[in-house]
Length: 162
Ligand code: ZN
Image (cartoon, rainbow, N blue to C red):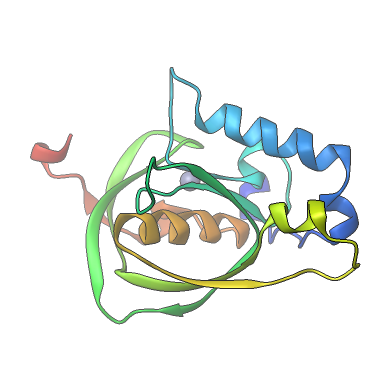
């Protein structure tokens, strides 16, 4: 769809404090946790909202929670790559192999910070993430830039991974 090809717009602090933001966050988490078609990450454009917000399951943290990331930017992609199988909630029935960086540096704002914050500027955090979780971040941040995993697919899933 052309909608998924858009450059999503950043979110401002006013929006993060709005009811619409809570509804969007809830809709994304419900969609990605849908037991009939669960995912490990989702971007706002996938629920019809062209804004820079993603939810990613943190397999690298205890209890593997979903985190919400506002205006995420990958500021560094490692040269060392991993080849792995991917699919997408927005592209049913397609899976394939994609090469991604093994490690990334992510810059983002954390919605939890705002709720307590009285200022009107966004606090920005930086984090280095490795492994499968880093792959999910790369897939989801691509969605905010109108890029789909099928653009980067280097081949079909091997029979053993289906
Ligand atoms: Zn996707």
